[in-house]
Image 1: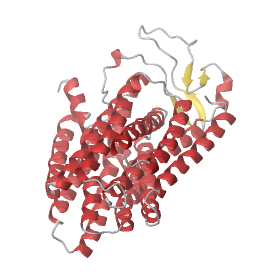
Image 2 (image 1 turned 90 degrees about the vertical axis):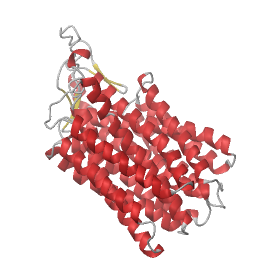
Image 3 (image 1 turned 180 degrees about the vertical axis):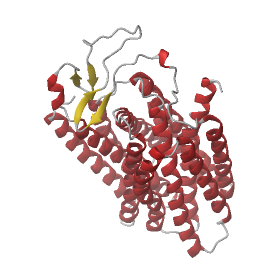
Image 4 (image 1 turned 60 degrees about the vertical axis):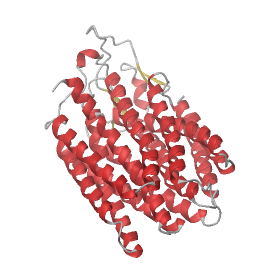
Length: 433
C-alpha cells in the first residue's frame, strides 16, 4: 500500500474515535434527561465511563505493549461495535433497568477505548521514534484528527437527539465497522514500521526518561549526515548539552509528573466540563436550549480545539504557554457562570476550546516523546489521567448542581486557579521558563 494512503487511513482512526465518543456522550446525557433522570443520576452515568477509564487504560496499556497494535485495535473496534448494537436495542427497556444498562454500557465502552487510544498513541509515537520533528508532526496530526471528530460529533449527537436517537447509535455502529476495516488494511502486523520516510527529517537525538535523569541517546545530526555536537537540545526553557555534566541535575521524571497533572487538568476542564454542560444547557433552570442548539455550542467549542491543533505548528510549546493557558481557562469559566446569551457564550466556548486544546497537546507530545520503550503503558497512564478527571468531575458537578446550577463553573475555575498557582511555584523554584 502507498505510504501516503496508509497515513491517511491511519489518521482517520482518531477522527472516528472522538466522532463516535462525542455522539454517544451527547446522546446519553440528553436521552437520560428526556426519560426523567435527575442531575445526580446523569452525573453517575457520565462518571461510570470516567471511573472505569481511570483504571482500565493503565492496566490495558501494559497489555498493548505486549500485543501488536493491530490486535489491540481489532479488539477495540469489535468491542465498540458490540456496544453500539446493545445501545440500539436498549431503547424499549423499563426505566429502572435502562439506567443500569446505560451504566454497564459506559463501563464496556471504557474498556474498548482503553485498548483504542493507548494503541493509537503508542503506535504513532513508535512509528516516528527516529526523529523529534516527525514525532511532533505525527502527534499534531493525531490531535487535529480527533479534534475535528469531536467538533462535528457534538452537533451530530444534538441533531439525532432532536430527530431519532436510535439513528445516532446506528451511525456509531457503522463508523466503528469502518474503523475495523481500516485497522485490518492499514495497521502493520509487526512493530518497527515508520510512518514517515526517515530521509524527510533530521535524526536529531531525543531525550528520554531514564531513572529521573537526562539521558541524551544521540547527538544532533543535520540532514547532511554530519555530526554537530555543539548544538544543544532545548526542553521548555532548559538548555541541555550532551557534553554538559550539569545537565544530569535536571529531573525529567518530575517533569513527567507535572505533564500528567496537566493532563488531569485538561480532563477536568474538557471532558468533565463537557459532561456537565449539555445537561446545564437543556434543563429549564439552566439555559433551556434545544438539543440541536446545545450541539451547535459544543461544536464551536470543538472548532476552538481544532484551530488550536492546526495552529500548533506556528506556536511555541513551552511551560510558560501551558501556565498562561491555565490562567485564561480559569477566567473563562468564571464568565460562563454569568453569561446567558448564546452568542456571547459561544465566543467564550471557542476561546476555552482553543486554550484547553493547547494544554492537551503539550502534555501528550512531551509525555510520549521522552518515553523510550513502554509507550503503551505511558499512553495508558496518560489516558488514566483523562479518566480520573472525567470520573470525578461529573459526580461533583452533578451533586453541587442540585444546590445551584452555576456552582460547577465556579468550581472548575477554582481548580484551574489552584493548579496555576502551584504550577507557577514549581516552575519558579526549578527555574523553568
